[in-house]
Length: 178
Image 1: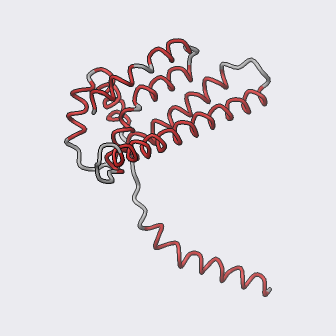
Image 2 (image 1 turned 90 degrees about the horizontal axis):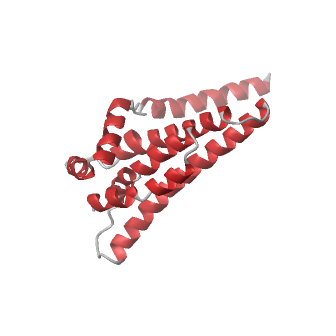
């Protein structure tokens, strides 16, 4: 009985502390139509897209409305392509698909933050700029649009040679954004 009363007190303490925090969480709904239109614009006419992006004032918006959803879509595409494109048993196919999905997710997530950090360091040290973390995240996030699109397509279909060739288009998108 004493154990149950102490457990109840712990639950009440937990609720007392975290309910106000939970109420402050802002729900972010992603507009996938806008996301797709932004991707198409960045791939088809990068100069026009970068002009539009340059007028935006919120740098954090790129993470929640562009990078994170695309990383999730890439992971899902790799999972579906690995699961249904595999001839192994169902249990082995699921394990392989989950492994490929996690590897894709981690590589894109880590690659984004590593590129944003290196971009910031290079900007500070070589170009004598101030610390512009948000601007670098925005630049790197939108510059990865070709990598995201190729990862989605190659996750569903096997086009590895085309995947490697089209990654060079990323250099053009970055050039237009710089």
